[in-house]
Image (cartoon, rainbow, N blue to C red):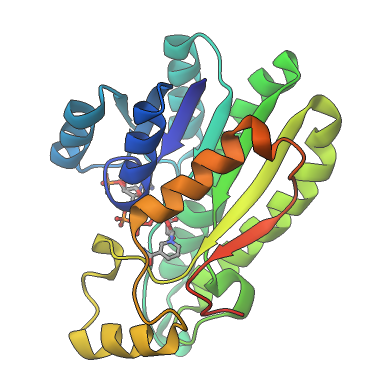
Length: 237
Ligand code: NDP
């Protein structure tokens, strides 16, 4: 399969690049600025890295076009790129709000709009959005993030209905707390209470999220669409 993964330089995205490459697929991934991490991912997997700021429509569209040309088509899109921010709601600035929404929701829209053209032409495709359990249950002091991820849920369900007749499935993976750099700024006390609140009493691993993405892209998952699937150790049940 020809696979495009956004935010593939680090964390869950890198685990997805590794998994799809290991399974024998051709992979291109996008990243924003961390060239060192992107080069490391490329070196580990052989995947092509393309630098693009997905919160800019022109960057996102150009990157998808370049990836599709390189791959000679597109079968699977994993919308993984994202950023988090922890802030009291009353301290959230207009810029904070726009940055969170542009990156976590609009970026997926720009990328998916371009990718869907190829998939519709081919009458097949898999779109996998990486949401968050906070998009389902909301997180205190993460209102813009939660709102953006909730938007991704709506986009998933609506797009599944629109693209189903074209043979394209659209699903959303909603991770709980996963051990990546995104959580590196959390104190050990916070991480410990997040572990305690997780029924399985641990953080998730990026590879576990990648395994679910690989399943949703597989033939066995061909009748699953419009679903928001939690992978959170039971946190958001
Ligand atoms: P990381 O911070 O480890 O990696 C984020 C990735 O997204 C990087 O590759 C980064 O590129 C890329 N990225 C960020 N902004 C942009 C942008 N504007 N344009 C292009 N690429 C961008 O994050 P995680 O792996 O932890 O998270 C991945 C996804 O999973 C996110 O959508 C996140 O919201 C979601 N998630 C994560 C959870 C967690 O606990 N970690 C829990 C629930 C959901 P660069 O390296 O260049 O900065």
